[in-house]
Image 1 (cartoon, rainbow, N blue to C red):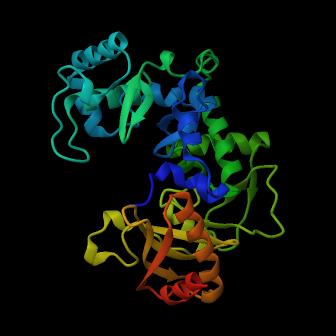
Image 2 (cartoon, rainbow, N blue to C red):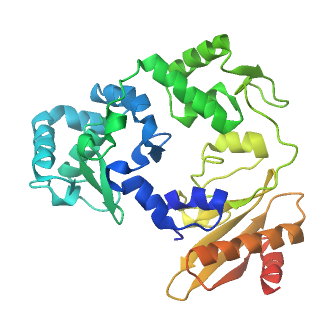
Image 3 (cartoon, one colour):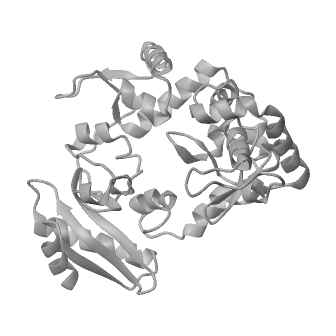
Length: 352
């Protein structure tokens, strides 16, 4: 509809950038800076985090923390999975569609072939990783042929030590967070997160805090500093770290957000592919966006403002951000539709 989701968080923070830089960082041979694995969901992560996630790979091997259907399938087909691994070891990087005897997919989306089930299981357990991508399709290979040797040489830390490191990273990224927020950032199990948070508080690596209006205790990184003011302006991907945990976004910003792509058309309130708009320290609106590449147009079928915002001011800032996005995507102009209470001010701002 717009652009692949992994490209948007960097645009939100840096503005227009060359997307091939991210491609090279993620898939640029053994000197890559990023790798694919499960963070909060399937994510591009710094390669330095790979040792901190090996405990998750080991748990996956035991059938813990993986989709139940995939676990049941893998337990029945160990020999088939071992054969797929041997095939990639011998032949080199392969997509699921290139496997010998991988079977046929059964429809779209999650109608995976047996070969796809096998490589995804091996991906979960860390015995395969993503070498590159061909459009949307993962191409799998052995980690020792893909990841930097220096990363693979790092000793595997104990599970509790790795989890503490991940919670520290989460606290630094989130600013202020509940135990549940800290757990969600790397999708730690609740019991694991509870133990790790307690250990970090005792060590002085997390500072307990109270946030007015929050029912649960909060925590801060000891080096956290509250800014005097925030001058951010950004369109956010539906999966951006600022809003991916919907309950936290509502608690922080009073922003109730549900993505429309999973909602039947008649039940959508704001559109299909809706991006929140951050201005200063508030989420002030949301826009339904689609890229009409044939016409060279960034379409805005709907634009909605949050309550109690200065709509003309928001519209002017939003128009600037939409023009920047259009240019980044190689689109010549922005065209706003009529739906939503921000649509008319946005059209006026775009005419300026």
